[in-house]
Length: 233
Ligand code: ADP
Image (tube, rainbow, N blue to C red; front, side):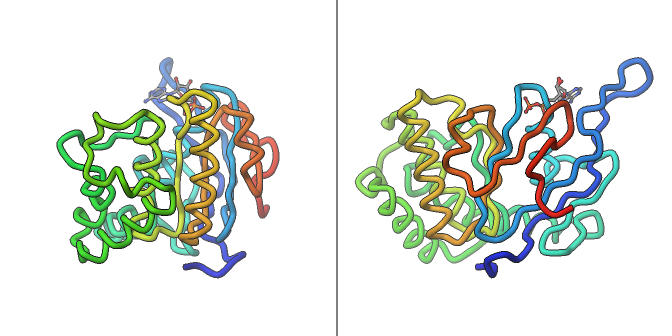
């Protein structure tokens, strides 16, 4: 677990341009953002302002056209591919708008999947997975298949899965986008509580203004720029 206040993630001068010439679209325009240990940062902005693009870059699923991303001070662009894979698998957790649980695996098997992919001790992962499920009162669902759960339950199982490897940072992209209001509130609440218990910082992007009430810091984005709350400058 990182020390409270320590910088976990730093993005500096991030630009992203898609296409070229007449098809060129500038989506990020030199954006700075930091996340410290123990923070729950909600990144709010209207649809199309570049939130998912930013999260894909910070989650090492895409590269910026220019600018730097550092995890715990280490420059991502200077890492080898195995180092980047290890970072993705162990230090980062992901939650997306759609739960993306694997239909042919049970709830517990889904929760331990990141540990299986990372070749880790599966018994220890199952214990941790059960603990996470229990934390949300979902332990009774461990043997069910995703098709036997409600949408809200599936997304809460996906939360447990994102934390099973004990990441330092959880990246969430519109995790309530597919849910009704009451299930959405439950997911925000559970996300906050599970991250606190696991010691993971959270960066959640959303257009849902209610997220602001759960965050320790709100960052606002508009048209490819952070307009306030970006952190250290
Ligand atoms: P948000 O998550 O805030 O809704 P996105 O990051 O998904 O915003 O998209 C920001 C802008 O970038 C949108 O105008 C979108 O059309 C554009 N965009 C996203 N991906 C691509 C791509 N691969 N090629 C061209 N434009 C893209």
